[in-house]
Length: 355
Length: 244
Image 1 (tube, rainbow over the protein chains, first blue to last red):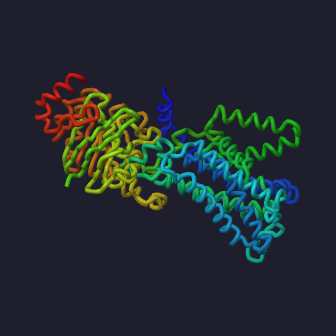
Image 2 (image 1 turned 120 degrees about the vertical axis):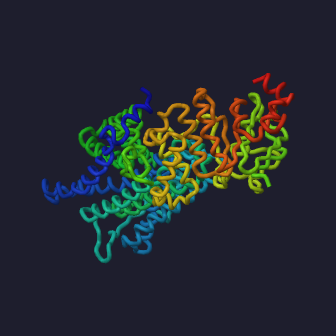
Image 3 (image 1 turned 30 degrees about the horizontal axis):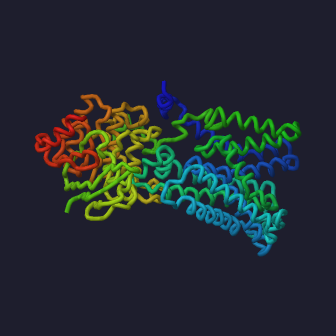
């Protein structure tokens, strides 16, 4: 049986697997929503504080992972530069906070998003506006160069704090209310993550998502149908930058400072690992990737101080080598991962509509 | 004014002249067959017309507009559709989604993001699938269709957006005799809707379908005329029929 036949055999409506992805998505997001409440019930507020703060960081890094999934998993752009948008927006809001005293969430969030959007739009325009289709290597090196240059610039520029980065000493505010790390920030991050996630899901399952699926499979063919492939990819890349920027702006306030490596290749590579580990082209996969890697790191570092990085690296290699579709690929069929884009909820074989 | 005008078009690959001052006109509602031995330049000419290759010299006009340097996407948006020689349907998408992908191609991306035309295009998708007798496979992946069905799906994709010129590169390649006959049946009624340029090896298939046939040999037009004239052409008999 060929792979395609196996995929066909697992098509929605025939195997009962069609709801698996949705089930995983709901499960993960509900888990995030309930976690602080459950921890408080079990350990009390003080003892669960560390894990609440840590999970907030995980959710903020999820913006970075989601942005990579949009770029690579949906637009086919192997970006080694997502950290540029994440860290770049973190730097801008940190400097705004330091020099202008701005800390309102109503300014920080739009500004962070805008900075990410602009940086990605500029880099995307530069990389995708050539007359020839850019290769994966060209995109990878182009984005890597952007990320690397930004890190070097930050390290060398006194105004940006050089090696030390920029501290964000003010708390984020909603109106007059300061929002310190902890439960408030947790639910703020979760709220934004939910909005972004639902928006992304709507997009990738829309008719626009069908175009992206077509580009992923036969980039050269789809142009002959009338699609402007590079423009479409540039739009998704800009959107991925905006999402990374939103996360970066929040991250700067949550962590209390930004540093050069936040924009550099190391953080960019982290985004790739989150995506590949959890499973790209699924949206939820990269979020699972962030959670898996970050929680494994913090647990392993406690018990296996000298070996944790080797074990983690080995685990990542295993998943990437033997399961290119990541952890989510273990549970979700290829057909479901790609999705169907016709009228939702219509069983065409029993459809008796007269149109 | 001809729908498509190809004048003195030249295309080379290094030292090899694939097309050498080729002329070809296609009128409205005309089926134009393009035949020739292997390496005669048929596919290269089709690629130049569709935008997959760019000619070095000559004139390419579609509805009176110069299209020599326009992109394949712009040519498709202006009413030209191409069916590739090697089937290139989207294997990982359903048959239904393949047609939807083709139908929605000219819509603004923002409209697509809102899935605003999904309901409206549904009946058109099913109509197209019914016309090509693959409606029962609508929910199957395109990759599991038989070769003949994939060819029909690809023709259906090219035809669905309502092009004014349909370019078919060997639509019956790899088909059984029965599938060829069916393909002929499917293509005949299309004449009411658009013009067509068909590249084919099979003279029998193309002569029943075409109003005009152009024969290429070594990158040059050997002869052009009605199927009857081509059948009786001594030059064609000598060069084409003895070599293929």
